[in-house]
Length: 83
Image (cartoon, rainbow, N blue to C red):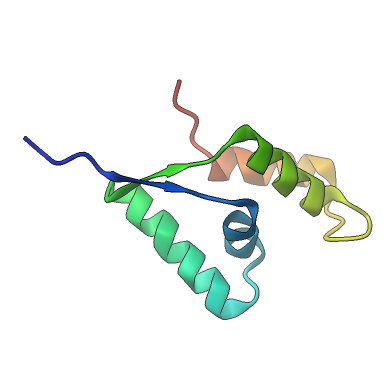
């Protein structure tokens, strides 16, 4: 029987670094986490509050200031929801 994948609780900074690509060293570390998750080596657990924080940062005029529609499209492609 295959050993269950390890769980990693991902915070907003990890997601933001992956999406924004900066700083580069942090973005590469974040990419490695999600690459492992895509290979089922670990399960990335993302709390709904973390999603809200990512949306807040990406849409805030004082921070990243991306249009809401663009943020919605990017996050839909980035997150795979399991129920």
